[in-house]
Length: 88
Figure 1 (cartoon, rainbow, N blue to C red):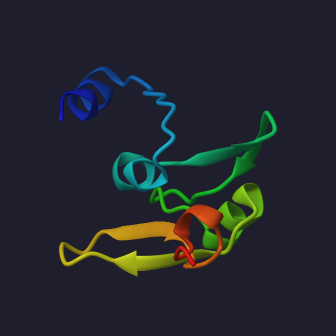
Figure 2 (cartoon, rainbow, N blue to C red; figure 1 turned 120 degrees about the vertical axis):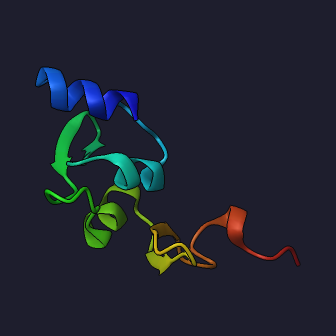
């Protein structure tokens, strides 16, 4: 994309703030998490977020899956959030 070309050609650093963890790890070369305003290193040089660190920051069990396109996605484990629980 455009930002990647600018980064490569002009040697720019691109900093993006994203609240969608899956989008962040899909496009980022490096990722970080913030916890109460403190930077918590969350991903390696390939942009992948560490599942344990994501769990620690958000305070809910996390699971990972792979889409049919081969993308890794993270999400809260079933039943770990009131919004994810089946209604009675």
